[in-house]
Image (cartoon, rainbow, N blue to C red; front, side):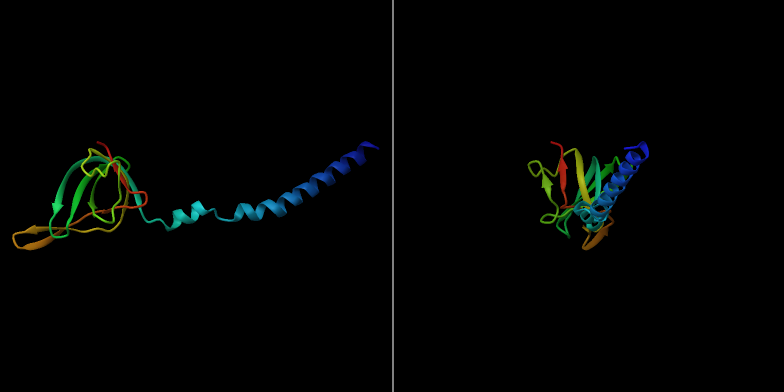
Amino acid sequence: MTTQKILKTILQTLLVASAVVAVFLLPVAKMPSPAHAQLSTAVEIPYGGHELFWITCLCSKNSLHFIFDYRTLQVLPLVYQPGSSVLYLYYNLFGRYFLGSHQPSGECLVLVVKICVPIPSEGTMGSRPGTGTSL
């Protein structure tokens, strides 16, 4: 066999192999993975930081925690709602540091004289994955 025929055979083999790869692997590569689908539907925002102080919301039967978020370098007022917010590590709500996720909705109502007054918050401590605290 001459050198030209050998090169032609190698080139044809590579062409067929690349066509097979393109036919079988490219459609799989373009399909979204389940992780992407879960990320697009998730509405919880991650946070983590040091708790500055907290107050009890008597009218709404929850508590409002003011956490200095290290990610955004801002104070986040987050509502802990019993029954919907998930806690980890011995269900400790009164730790020093918080790490978790929050939903962008939540309400804290405090009693002022005889009227319930809302205090603005950034949201409610979440349930996916939830919130963990230090001891």
